[in-house]
Image (spheres, rainbow, N blue to C red):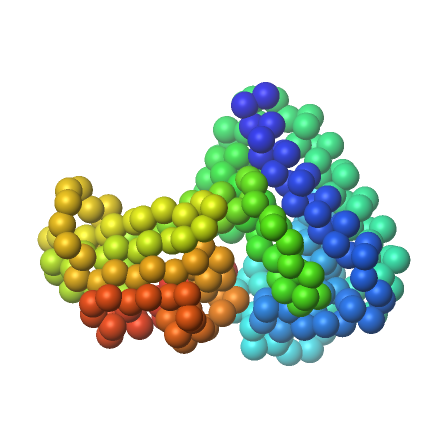
Length: 269
């Protein structure tokens, strides 16, 4: 099957999540994570809730005011599933997580080629189903890192999830630099990402449009930073100051523009 690698990416990420949570105590589920407003338990509850939603389960009723970190309708649905599970035990949460993820993987393995190409709803708008599954991997992989950061249990976790995350955020750079950061005409920004999936990306602004640079040239701004800091900022897990002021980050050129880009980089819903 052409999209078996996507199923593998989800399965690997969810299995790593299960293994991580199996190693911690009940009290650890109350630790805050880098995901604004959510504890370890809340993050897992969100993963459960989203898969239930895709399987046809309606979101539970949410009573009271929505927290400040909720900014859109998807966030409201997520929060309803999270709130409903706030007082459940680790055993209950883990069992439900295993049930919904096993069911989701079974559904995906039952799809034919045509189903993967069907265009429909996704958090990014209308998209082919394979693109939507990529987004599920992105979300699940970032949340796995949220859990690892919260539990202070880092691990060398590369593979499909990391590649999708970095590729997606790299693809958004013209929008970040041109539209959100309003880089001036003639700007050429070089972003050096350092790490296993590192790469050097050059974006230039020509005729009011930011795009991949088409030839050699000297950048007006060059930022070098670890891949892990880049995606954490793009996912909204660290501040622009944490990115720019990190010992591993080096800036050469227009620092005012660097600040605007760092602020604009937080793009994950």
